[in-house]
Image (cartoon, rainbow, N blue to C red; front, side, top):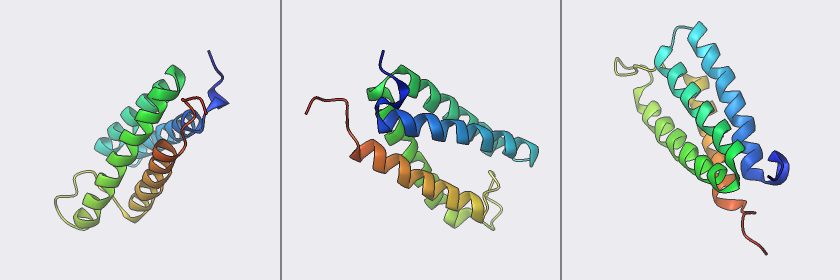
Length: 116
C-alpha cells in the first residue's frame, strides 16, 4: 500500500476531512445540528476515501467539491431568510467556497493514479 502522502488527492481528502470533522464538532457546540451532521458525514467519507486509495480520494474530492459549491450557492440566497435551516452565515459561506475550490482543483487537476 502506498503512503498517504503519495498523492495530492489523498493529502487534500485527509487534511480537509480532519478539518471538516473539527468544524462539525464546533457546529454541534454552537447549536447547528444539521450543519454539524453534514460536515461530520463529509469528514468521515473523505478520511475513509483517503485511506482507501488514490482513485477513491479523487472521486471523493470531486463529489465534496461539487457538494460544497452547490451548498455555497444555495446559501447565498438562503442567508437571512427563514429557509436557512442549516443556519449558514458569512463565515460558513466563505469556508464552503474555499473548500469547493480546493477540492475541485485537486480532484480535477492533480492526477497521479496513471503512469506518465
